[in-house]
Length: 128
Length: 128
DNA sequence: CTACGGGCTGGAGTGCGGTTCAGGTCAAGC
DNA sequence: GCTTGACCTGAACCGCACTCCAGCCCGTAG
Image (cartoon, rainbow over all chains, first blue to last red; front, side, top):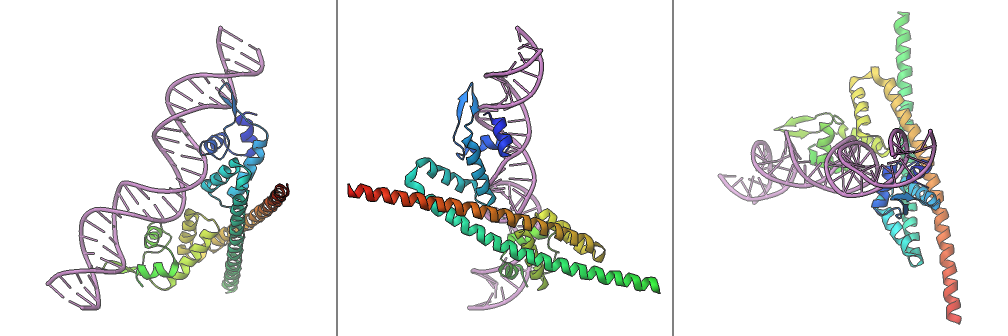
């Protein structure tokens, strides 16, 4: 498939795909007449990259992972450790967000209270 | 308190505190001999800003919130809505991260399997 | 009174993760 | 053969959120 199709399937812009290739996240595909022709497996790899990115991993770290992957089996344990570290970070981040959500809920409840009080004031003013 | 102390208490760098003041996130404090002198309440406000930031809110949106806060009660409902929207985003983000965590767990389990197979191969090789 | 640690300003610089642009080339349909 | 739309390259540019810097001032301990 050509780059436009891959862009459509992955949701990454054409520019981003070329950029990812440039920095070594995506293997340079075969070319026909200068144009990139991707293997369908590329979609799976890019989806994985998207997931790593969603966890907050930097492109640099993803590049390190991609590099190890390219080196084959010998790097398997290292890659696993990378994923384990990232997994731990994700759990931490979830905890942090959960705490923030609780704080927001508290603040929102507070605002509701304040608004209720103001409505009451309005009623009183009306009754005067 | 002076800016150094506030920096220590909030964990934000002195430069960041001045930057936040410049962009309107923090009220300009009183000055004595040109130096900023903060009220202890500043810590609470900054901690709240940190929480908003942790939720992924942009400084620009935080500025909008700060501006409304400065305008007083009339903006209360708008501020509540902002927090409610942010709360929804946080919940979404937690869902996304949870899904990523699951994917990572799956991948990690996969790596364990691969490693186990390789150990087996090593044993076989040893027995030859 | 002097040294020194902390604070001040305005503005330039940084790192990240793309995005845009100029100026082309390629290929599929008419 | 020609048009049209997709694709190509290298390099410049962008927004965000800081971070650093030069050159200055203030205040307090010795």
